[in-house]
Length: 78
Image (cartoon, rainbow, N blue to C red; front, side, top):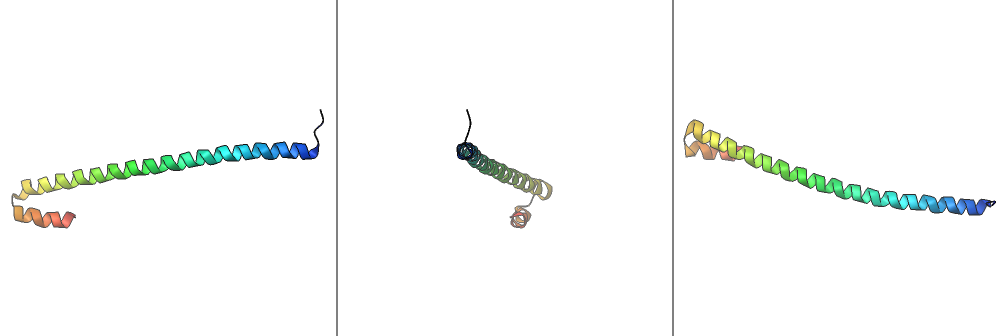
């Protein structure tokens, strides 16, 4: 079977379109996953910061034993 140039060109264009559509869907999924990953990392870092602040506050109270000094330090860490 012989292909005419226009038929061959049409098949190539249709095939390219299918590939582009599948790539676009893949890109959208990848962007969604990247956004979910970013949210997870942001939440993890916020939790870590809160844990560190709490630890530092407890350490200040244990080292100094004064709530007056504690509140000065809390303002410093905010």
